[in-house]
Image (cartoon, rainbow, N blue to C red; front, top):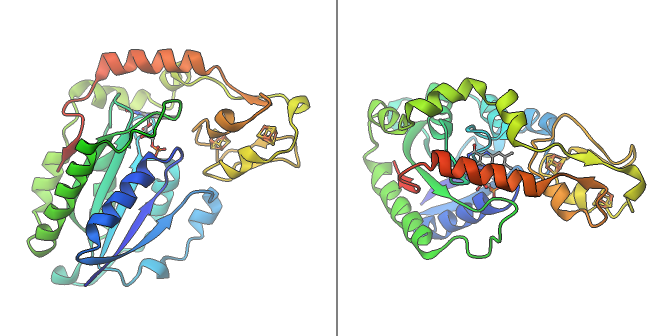
Length: 276
Ligand SMILES: Cc1cc2nc3c(=O)[nH]c(=O)nc-3n(C[C@H](O)[C@H](O)[C@H](O)COP(=O)(O)O)c2cc1C
Ligand code: SF4
Ligand code: SF4
């Protein structure tokens, strides 16, 4: 039996549901463990003990797409993963899964693939899926078509463990983005990003110290002793805004929803869900 570790961060739970579905399907031919990065600060990720994944045969890396990219904590984690030197036949396998909100998955899968290929991991497959935004009702997810696609994906992985695809072929397939997204890529994290994502505001006087925001922050970025205050590890997932019962942490979510809806109409990536 193989040994697989699933590494992911899922601020609003969609990517985690996909990881659980992958685990269910993988169980027939692999033991599965999880490295769920929820709640870890950037520093904790930089200090991660990679001994835990040293002896696994396969890793699966999952991220939501944020501003056309992988999440920053996932990027930090991948940066820290040691290069492997097992010889061609024994290279650990890797597969990727990304969820996105029907705007664009950017070059997320391609960028993760390149980092891990450079560290000598052998890419055997990737999956992109549309999943709910944090402000949407999410109980419907994963719907039957997603359940079926994940099952197909895991079957494909079983074959590809024995017959891995060529890296050049995988790289070509993951380079699916249209020219517009490639052009927009450098603009994200700049005025474009600020024009879409509404500011998060804090009103200290309204805080009742219930700590719900702290429990739901995926990067441990909130300190109640000083406010509440939010530090630089914030990835702007809006979980704190969603759970705060008093409005002490707030943002103009109606405005944000309208902007995202416009972007969905403008970009609308096809095919929405795909196995590579
Ligand atoms: C700050 C932020 C940026 C996002 N950027 C994108 C994006 O560039 N493209 C897209 O299609 N969806 C985007 N989304 C939507 C998420 O990718 C999508 O909801 C994802 O499934 C969330 O995964 P999770 O439930 O595991 O947190 C963004 C969401 C947030 C909060
Ligand atoms: S501070 Fe709020 S918006 Fe920032 S990462 Fe934490 S929960 Fe998400
Ligand atoms: S959730 Fe809101 S009220 Fe509760 S501790 Fe956080 S900021 Fe304060």
